Image (cartoon, rainbow, N blue to C red; front, side, top):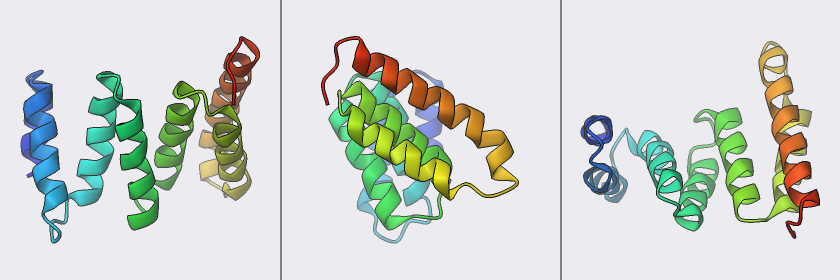
Length: 129
């Protein structure tokens, strides 16, 4: 089912892709729920529906904490920043950086640090927290 959503996404039929992902999310027993939440957040972000995308990411963190945890936290921090919630984004990035362990730290630390820097710049350029 999540595969159908990805096929629709690849065909640039975003509304159909969202409908396909929503169908997976409504099915409580689907093994693809975590993937559907993550993929739908990308589409929702692309469509400018940041609040709903953020809700999906928060659900993902709570319901599926082992599903790509660093990527999900990074995406949520970016989402919070887009919604001018800079302090929350910085706190999430700081917590994620503190939780890094080898070998993930070598790859993720520069990325997370750069995103945190971007959040600080956005806040300084007139954003409020």
